[in-house]
Image (cartoon, rainbow, N blue to C red; front, top):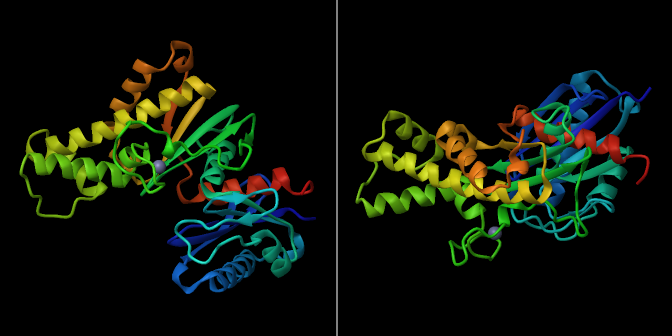
Length: 319
Ligand SMILES: [Zn+2]
């Protein structure tokens, strides 16, 4: 009986591997640094080693494993299992990762974009459980996105669907890592909210004693609404408004049942979510917000591996 699934969530900083059952419960998991600077071969060897260690710790043999789902930073061709030059991993120009891992592990492998995997994980076992359609936004250094419609990730014609972070919000706005200007990512990511704070601090000629981080901004905001606290609240509100505009646009376009937000920026709590929800209600068509849920993700670090396992269950056997 092949009742287990191996899964991985590969990030620029850490790799997480997990052993799951078919119901999507994480039975064992491991986390190790990616060490991306050591190159492609080293990363693949590390991943294979981690798969074997996860199996050993879980007391499960490879013959009991149905297949392997891998969440990996995009862009990629999920059908053919080819990775194209992810921005935070060097030396990954057109790598047939699916074939490479299938040869190493002798098991079917399915690749999924990391943001899509997180969306699928939250849909299957997290905040979106029981819904029919979900949009997930990951608010970290950048803004990632994933769209799940009728239980399946919507990949689009070239696998680029769900890149909400690069929706243009401001015509001639801040420059973005993608080369465009005014993208949501430049306003709603941790980098974006920090940039807004820096602008406000310069304008008010205030120099904080500690580094400007999302954590520090949360602390200042909670401390009160004058001085540093007031500016932090304002900067966070601006990020909430930007995210709210984007979500209203997506709500009108796709009319999903739920938006799930994850990542460090969501720790800013109601300072972020309050203005965000107000903005969505103000801008989206009334029917698009009727019963619409906008919530924090619940799976944390397990979202990516859970979604990667789901992708394997959905797609193995037909690829
Ligand atoms: Zn962009």
